[in-house]
Image 1 (cartoon, rainbow, N blue to C red):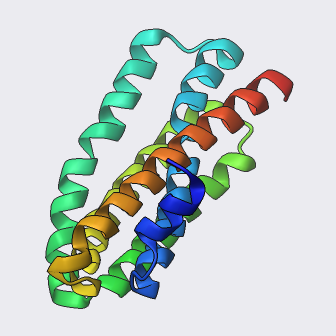
Image 2 (tube, rainbow, N blue to C red):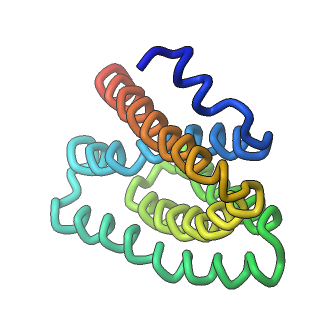
Length: 166
């Protein structure tokens, strides 16, 4: 499919959908930190595979209660507020990692980031339904799924380059 055809397919969607698209690309690019963290902890720190496996399991496990909490809060507080606050706390959870001298503390901040990141998911999905009508909803979700894939692919490439060069 040519770029012009793709642009035509996704043109005419509400402005908010394009904003969510960009945020999903950026957010998924940021997810490179989890596989990069496993490499860093294994190769650079010497942490055992069992501990890293447990760390990744906990990161995945905290997302279920985070999503449930996010859905409940989005209904009571509002979608934009939940997305803004939860994503801000998730981003802030990564900041101490840049300054830590003891790498063994990093998993705590990563688990926190995974939890708060998952809180925003239900609010984001509900917001897509709020912004669209049945006639353009499929195109909107398709664009957002494309953003997830693009961000994940780009983030993985950046992670590999960072790991190999720095």
